[in-house]
Amino acid sequence: MRRVTRCTVVLAILQLPARPLLANPESEALRARAAVEIYNMDRDQALETYRRAVAADPEDAAAYRGLASAIWLGITFRRGNMTVDDYLGRANRTKTPPVPPPGEAADAFRDAIDKALALARKRVENNPRDVDAHYQAGAAAGLRASYIATIDGRATGALRVARDAYNEHEQVLALDSRRKDAGLIVGTYRYIVSTLSLPARWVAYVAGFGGGRDRGVQMIEEAAAYGGENQTDARLALVLVYNRERRYDDALKQLDLLRNQFSRNRLLWLESGSTNLRAGRPAEALRFLSDGMSRLASDRRPRMFGEDALWLYKRGAAHAALGQPPAAEQDLRKAISLEGRPWVHGRSHLELGKLSLKAGRTADARAHFQMAAALCDSDNDGATADEARRLLR
Image 1 (cartoon, rainbow, N blue to C red):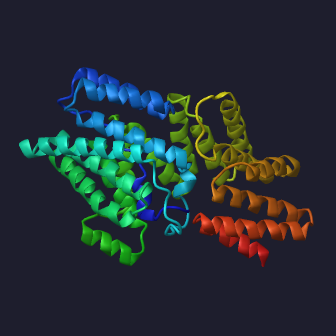
Image 2 (image 1 turned 45 degrees about the vertical axis):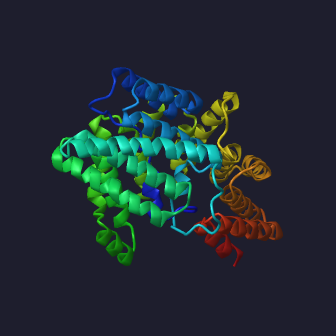
Image 3 (image 1 turned 180 degrees about the horizontal axis):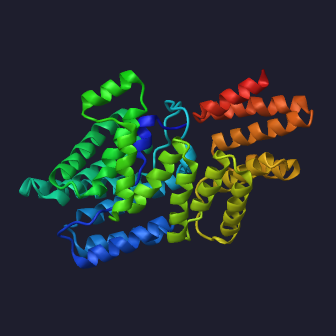
């Protein structure tokens, strides 16, 4: 849809630690606890737990990578780009450079990921047939690529690092075909390459990436079924891929599993509502969104940037689809009055414009469509901007 290219989509998938063969048992236990805390949106607790894991085993590459992941997620949370909506639709180049992250966060990420890579590569050098060492090296490279793409906004630079991740995990599968967890990175890159234009696909092939949409999805599915420590990552990747493929029932099955496992993660209710909206099921969407907003109201933890506006836009859209103009207009007007991403405000104006048009308020509709086009263009939501311009005509 907006602030990322299609190649960046692949780089946005979390790569939390997989199990290293040589890890201290205390470090393993702490990493497992931190991963649950991350997925439950207890980010501050997760940061502290990962730091304890590093202290318990300073040679555990996965602990450093987990710490880097938590830092990265904190930055994306503050930017408000942690939802499926940020990676759907037409791919566009970012029109404005991303706001640099806080210096201390950027430094902490680099320190942690550099250490994770150094430890993993040292193990590979000592034993080139160490399957888990290759896995750790590839996962760390994948996380660095994700950061470069989503935080620095440099997709081309990210792909150079992503190629290392892809190659390392292909090596894992060559050494041990049972390691289906390595299929998450390889399969996701295969899927993304398959969605590129023909010239871009050839560039990707020359750079060393494979393609194949069906095979890519299958590999992600196998990683989700494998039961490794990146199983949740694979399920989240499937939510995104299934939404892109309009396999909404399959996406909702994954979200059902995730909600049951991570009941403190309110954004899973937001994604369930959003997926139902895309599937044309506004009543189900409204049920999830109303439940999620009740959770939001009683949740004292920090909000994602623009989160309240996003919830209100989604619920307003569900009311509008159900033919409930007063409730829809109330939510949508509230959404545009709150701090939020430009695309959220733009889509809210689009819905308000449609409501105005149905009510015969042509001048109001035109004003809303003009705002929708301008705001969505500014946040790389070209599809919505085009729809607003079409309605203006």
